[in-house]
Image 1 (cartoon, rainbow, N blue to C red):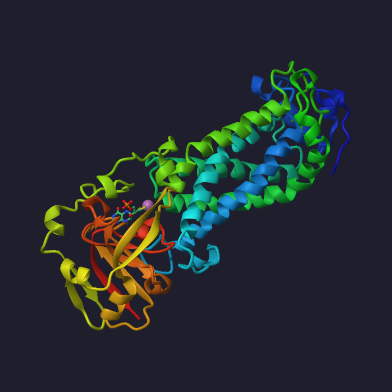
Image 2: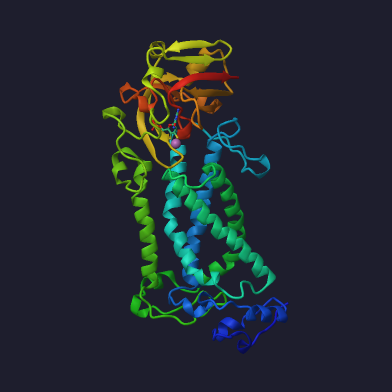
Length: 453
Ligand SMILES: Nc1nc2c(c(=O)[nH]1)N[C@H]1C(S)=C(S)[C@@H](COP(=O)(O)O)O[C@H]1N2
Ligand SMILES: [Mo]
């Protein structure tokens, strides 16, 4: 039911006629009651929001950027879950197949694929933070609109907005805290971030379906190019809109629309400039000032990123000394010393270690091909292999690799890096390095490999 309402009826504190006039869906007694129940809070006064550049056009510009960017962040996020190979127990927290993104086998063929995936996920996610904040700023009067909803459909729409805003803030906050190693939240990061993404995706989809027409209309309402030519002196508010984004009592402009766009775009560029170095790695790494990681981890050839040091993992020289052996488990179990491994055919290849957190580093690794070890264990066509570390506890103690990584010619049990023995922090005596394998599965201080057909 739609009731045409005269401005005088519903504008108790002088809300502009245009704003008050638009229809209520509630029955008249309900909206009258709502009007009377308006709490005496200053924030609920629309005259408080005075920025003369706030309006549907500016909101639509930020929205359009997010409409392109956020799906990429979500897609790479869900792809990363698949890259962890959740089909093997212990590789990732289990997700009920009913609510899981379809599993797409993660290929080993393109060595930099996971590096690119996480570079986009983390890098773009961070770069969009200023845009998300600007978008929220641009619609803030709606957060304090009274009555909170004017119809049932608007009430439902606003509930999806609560999930949308809560979802994006939750995803950005947990993501940033994770790459800063700041586990202030009391739940597992992966589980929270994953389910949070589903909530956000649902709300995002609903929001896009509902708002794309308004977005397109608003984008068409002004010329982008014209806006870039409009200086502060000629900056005037957009016409009043039914959504109440445009200020009813605008202040004089202190910033043009192009200035606002430059500020937000500049913010995204600065964030990118200060983080992209950790994905590109090595030569430009010192530019990654926002990286939580230090930049010196060893001497000479082994001076590159370490996520967890040997002492952090409670792996000691005694455990990795001459008594260390590798247990190959399978139809023909074999125990190998490091000297025996070094006596096998060695393969050298440049491969990245690409962490889920977005940093990566390409190094020159040498060691025994995993497929040679698989064959030695007596398995002709491996289905999976469980790699376990000397490190006994925690999420890093073991990882299961699938066929694609076990059979790739560049997948190694690395013994050396950049021409020297692995350092203890990089996983001496032996570690896994394989193309396009998420960093976390590049197990260090390997103790055993259990091969299954
Ligand atoms: N045993 C063990 N292996 C491990 C880890 C660990 O903490 N313990 N960290 C993993 C993670 S999360 C990453 S990104 C890489 C980092 O390798 P690096 O420390 O040599 O750079 O090692 C992986 N292998
Ligand atoms: Mo990692």
